[in-house]
Length: 548
Image (cartoon, rainbow, N blue to C red; front, top):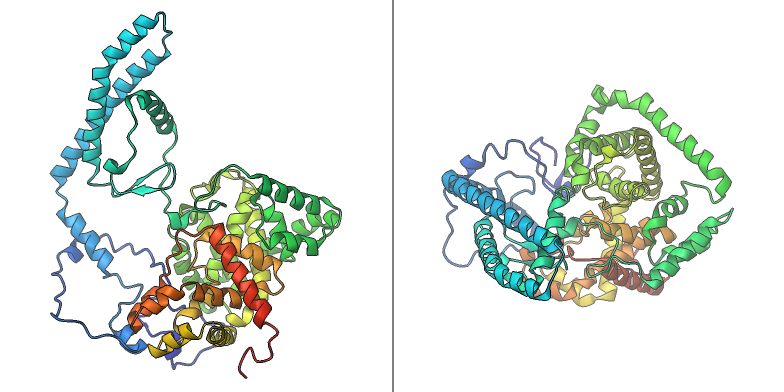
């Protein structure tokens, strides 16, 4: 949200609007980074706890009442901040230092003992009897080793709430982790030694992981996946790519290895003729950087300051859990892309939410040049020419996408208004029980589905799922402008059980704005798309589909 103190939502504003001005998105999920927050932690921690009135609180039955008792998403004084402040206040520095020193000391002893045991393991065994004798002598050391590790686990428990296991399962403490037998100690130590030799990587939350696999997926390519990849390569290898065949293959998902070239072809950025592609890429990339030279210096002009300021505020909020998007060079790329697009499209200008639409293209086109995980990838390690190519390709493909849904972002956002109304009519036909349940508790579709249309469900799904979803959107005729409606309907009905369990307005709104999709992978998205296709097949050509 902008910092002008105006917290009214878009449907309550009565002020005059000018085409091209900045539109705000209701229910934005990620708060901005506030540099004053940490300085105020201690002050926030000293606030007395809020007094609660005994008895059952009054239920909110209308959106106005719900809004009046709910803090804005960007307010600094949230409960999480107060909890952080209390935690910071209650930590005794002497206890922390004493514990840290003890952990370091135990760790050093463990390292020395591990090195000694590794040396012993590398020595050749001369006699079986001698080997047995050595194992008997090592048993006390191994027992001490296990005791020291147990002590370290206890020391580290105050700062570690969860341990990530190799099978992606979370355990709450070290005591829940699998414990190996004495025979496995040597293997465990070798694994630990190898892991400690690797560079430190921040732990990526499940919701922010972008691995192109299911949550239970295996890293090795299956026979079916290899066969699909061969089919893609055969289609792409011809002198003139059969785009219709490519769309059919892409509907069920595109392999990571060929996704960049496939997206460029399906979006219309590249021609089907293979001989013309290189010259087209060079021309379009030069054209984009020509725009940079022509327009980007005007970002500080008076009539462009508001647009650039809002872009500059929104960029750090874009996928804040993924380190890739917090790199300064990446944020500068996004600022240039969004500002140039806004200048070239004065009918809409920059609208909050468009910043999200750059991220899938950027990630996919980074994958074109790297093989490793992208979440922690340092883009400064890429050559400058490669980064320029990624930036230009992302700009043009995002522009192609927005060309088909620009009425979502023009004055009064009529495209979104129509699609939300169409969603309401569609849900009333496919699941009247859910529709009437929300009507009974006065939940308006605009209050939750506006974000679904404005951000193309990017705030509701992990980025890995968005990329898989866009594979199908690229393959569908009018995928972003038309098929997305059926995906939203299938997505809403997917939570039928949870919706019907909520018995008041507040509970419904909290559920619909925080749907539990962090564990989703390709399987869940594929089921969602299949249901959306069924709805489209049943309703798209129905004469009474939408009420006029």
